[in-house]
Image 1 (cartoon, helix red, strand yellow):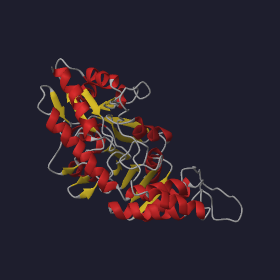
Image 2 (image 1 turned 90 degrees about the vertical axis):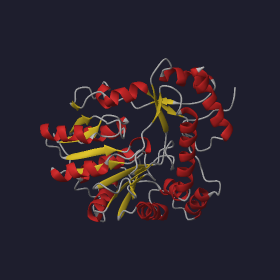
Image 3 (image 1 turned 90 degrees about the horizontal axis):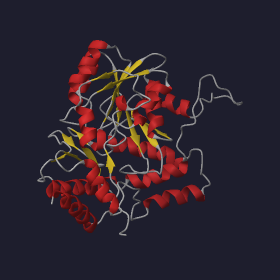
Length: 369
């Protein structure tokens, strides 16, 4: 059996940047809970994307939760959320005892449809709109922000999959009121687990840090006047992040090369369509995805790759089709469902060799023969 090829696995820097920061944390005994690495990672990430403030947290999910709390989402509030996403986007809405309303995608971006979003506003008055930049593809932010301004509604960007993606020259995550990044093991850079909340609202980010540190009041004794959370990132994890941030541009280049290879080799096969690209979008191509229509089905591709020890995945199953979320409203048609039913996430690991890529493409092409 050939060596395992992963969908997207952790990739530490060849230069060992991460270990420099980890070693410093060990040498100074700043292991946890916070420390220099946390402070510097927040500053470096904010500078990298162009935000005023950042709060380093235990996960991207925690960052979404804190963003919702920061905009005042609470009991019975409605939050518009894309249906085509991972459940981590939607779960924190329920943490706040709020009500998600799921919004369909469009084929042009695979992200939240501005048309469906406008229809949702005709039916509901939400507390916030939570959008996603799926697989590193930017949503149509001009249209979405214009709609949010029209209805005076706060906008949160789930940019967990899109660190390094540009929308008209701006980093995704910095266009709305709050932006969320994830450093899970499969992301374009990783801290093993962790997330970041960014915003230009310095006062609210300071409040998030307070909430995320168990809402401990500034008193000599342990005093808590608000509900708190254990959401802060550890100093060791932040050290990994500081090192990883130095190779972000390398990772984006490699992900782009992988996508372009697939596009050149597979794009001409009958029934295959690459995930969309737009003139205003500079994706990080976190995952290279396709849709397939014809005799060869997505499951055929995934099973053929699996037999050769190669990992691939289906597209996210829409939230309105998930058993837990089925009771909530959905605004749209069948776009997200069609993408899910016909989609495949191809291996996009930045450690893949040219030979790995050629092997993957050959396996897929053989299905057409």
